[in-house]
Image 1 (cartoon, rainbow, N blue to C red):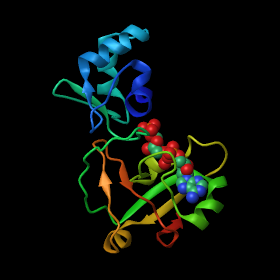
Image 2: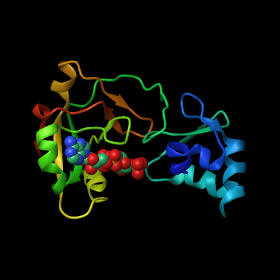
Image 3: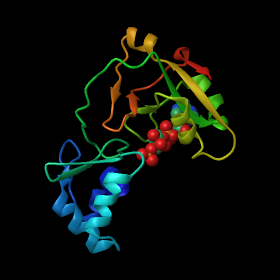
Image 4: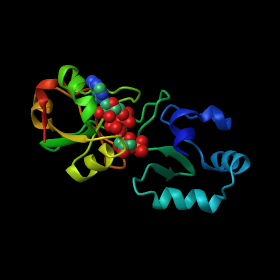
Length: 167
Ligand code: HQG
């Protein structure tokens, strides 16, 4: 579902609208035709996915964040908590320490409000991990924009090095 709704709708012959939505009926037809899943399975994933990656509303579905296809999620700019966290591999630290956090393949840098979530993100990576602390209060006061996705992921364009430290 993430693959289709974030990265490759064309793989299921679907087209997302400008804000990433697609008709749920079309989505269901496309998935049940191609994969061994039922409508009930899809609804169960939307409801019980621990990260609440998808929203179903007005008979349309979209991914809440993480797209590589061009979409405008129409997220509202909000004041972030004073501190946010980012979990990554120790191997990336030397480059991050020089360049700051970049959005890489995604539309934003993804940050977490708590260390536990940042740890889970970091542990997707091989080897040792590091948790970085982002001085979000200072970033915000110095003009950087922050957004929060429907599933509570904090998003920003980039995090320059002066706002980063090892937690
Ligand atoms: C790293 C999952 C070197 C960055 C998770 C990260 C999250 C740099 C990787 C969500 C760098 C990008 C996002 C620099 C950034 N030099 N490495 N200058 N700047 N990086 O997957 O934050 O399953 O795009 O530290 O749970 O790991 O998609 O971002 O390691 O919420 O719902 O480049 O993805 O959620 O990796 O993960 P990603 P992420 P979903």
